[in-house]
Image (cartoon, rainbow, N blue to C red; front, side, top):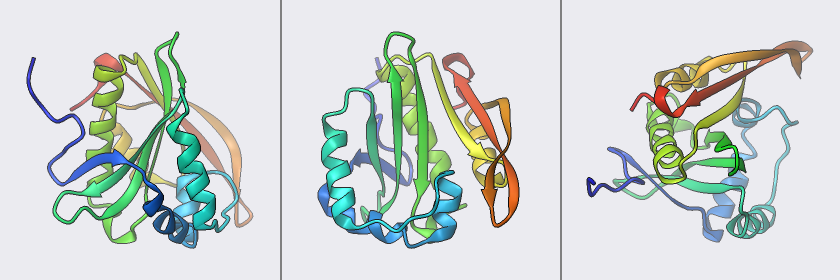
Length: 181
């Protein structure tokens, strides 16, 4: 077996989210554009205390893995990535990712983080399938998912309402043997 660091890429590494990260996570919730690409829930600013509680709860969860995405050169927190809703018996889970630091979006950092978390999911956790949902207007995210092997599996039509417009939610998934590292 190769002796490799499964949490380290060329420019980023995955590590635990810690309480000191809470102020950064809270600051990202002030960025409406970030929130409206990250999730279909309504955009809502959150406090550092809110995130401190979430971080504490996630550490004991059996169906969630949450990682900070940090740069290698200066250990800057730029985003988070998680596998959640893990069904151990079915070897499936759901992936969520967000690059909170605007200067690091659309620069390939998300794709690199996806490759790391999928290698972790398939080769460490022994998952068979990883799924996700993406809003149809989030073209850059959809492209990043496709680069690592995700395929469109379905569409939930016009279920996201933003600024009076209706958008689809695209369901995507990747199987272990479809992963593109």
